[in-house]
Image (cartoon, rainbow, N blue to C red; front, side, top):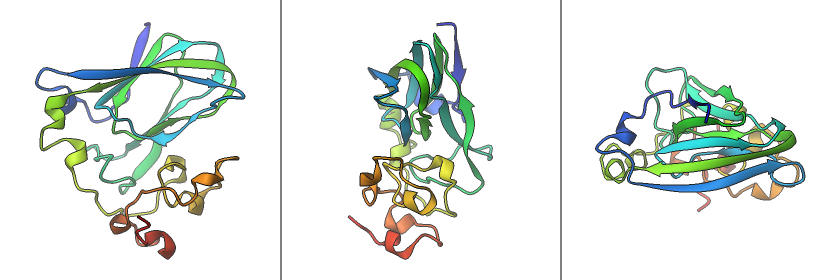
Length: 200
């Protein structure tokens, strides 16, 4: 591997403390015309993710990484759209033998591939000691959202208000009404009344 790009934005000390990772899950993803073109915005079930580009020749499929303008990294699992959030704040184009290292809790996605084929090895690293600690991201409360989202950060898979800001991608209208984020108690003031109702 010729190099790695670190996109955590707020460090990884908590996630790698007390002996480091205790387990990992590795798998491959492929983007190709006529098959999977890209990947919707999402978070990973990992504490730290390593994304390695194994090839082949391709154009497009850049990684979009969400981050904030604030010095303190927000809890990605407790607040989807914090105040002053710029989403995505960085675009990372992985080339052959390059890697991207980021927090699993960071919302991210992959743009549609324009041509060729991209194959990536994904490694989800977990730290059982961190996950058992009070500071674990999934133990934090989901905070009320202060403002509407930036549409560049929206997920058609997870966000209930996706259709309020942009059209669903062709063939993916079936996701309308299936999202869970934000929960009813965490809706921002201007969110459509129908979406504020708890649909669960």
